[in-house]
Image (cartoon, helix red, strand yellow):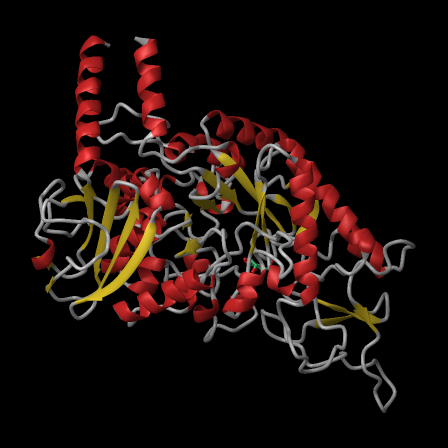
Length: 589
Ligand code: GLC
């Protein structure tokens, strides 16, 4: 029996499923971002921790490889991207690091992190860490030494005497550059009698990455975490890694400077040299770069490899509640058409810096957008909680607000700036604090958790979560991983695209309207015909799974989103044979 099982798995792996060459593990991955502080608390201090993530690994990994499921479901999330858990003063959601190779006691211990690596790997999950090379905390040993002028550390940060005042007194800041969180990006150090530069909070001084020793120290940090088992790194605030050395008020460029690309080339080489057998990936956070600058993060003009996955925030930055199907088509094609040859696309609908997708784009659209995210070519990133359609918590009072960006504003203006709204605890179940903590939660749990939580969605007949799971499983199919894409706008406001690879095609149809549409979806190059079947449908859809649809007269209720599947006759025969084989095996097992 073991032999037959093995043969079936082999068969599956060599037919419609993605070939899992070692080096290709990331190319169509489903990556799940976890903010440890808000995921699951196991100590009762109201803050999430590493043991909390470990306790939920089964949820994340789902049931792992399950080729005997009726729909040949093959696992789900592939990778967890864990936001910072290193030693921190917690000024900026742990993005102010005072020791890169220590685990902050809020989150647990190094032993916990080692356990996370080993347990995640045992469940087939990769682990990517958040690396913050742009700045440290002002409590980092390097800054403390730099501020007092200790030999070897003097130039670790960006120091400037400032602009001379005509009158007596302290020099003025060197220029008018503003911090992301408001106010000058220069802070005076009375100790050093100079200004230091900080793109973010004043407690987050920018490292001087032009200084070789700094890069070497950061490389040691990378090596430390690679040795522990990291599969790659998100590179925080990559666009801002370097500043224009002229220090002019209005330099030609503030972000994505040429030195940034060179450093990323170095880090890519560093990772490639570290492991010859398996890719370690780099995911630079590119905030809102012009498309050409974004594409430069992949590869240099002379072909030198840079990052495998420069973050693409275009679905967030360029689309909103009012966007039409034509806007979606334009944005997706702009990105795909600009990709360098061989580059892998990636897509985001949310992160810890953005409003929740369900709130930004409207609750009714969440299924359609998840279908979009999981069926576009390349890598998908899902921010924790988006799989159940968590919404922004707009009830966080000024007193409860902790996001530095909001705290730098005032009581009347903090709310639109606050990222806390999208950082609230995961809504696990209906118990107090949504099952996140037995203590007092560090941020208020969304009051809607009793209706909207994972447990309820798991037991419901249809739910956002169930849809996400189906989608995540379907992504393992070679057509979604490797297939071509053809995009059309149908009817008034329906986005439709086909994905085709060898003998299997999918047609994804998303009605962005609040009205019923009847569209003709028969004009795609992919060989779809009237025998096409519904494979996946949004929770509000009137369509049924396995229903045969007429492509030239497809009815879509408001916000309906469906995936239609077509197999060529040859594939159908193979799959029928496979189904028969599986029934026989089940009888004998
Ligand atoms: C990045 C992070 C953001 C943080 C900032 C400073 O933009 O995503 O959350 O505040 O860097 O580290």
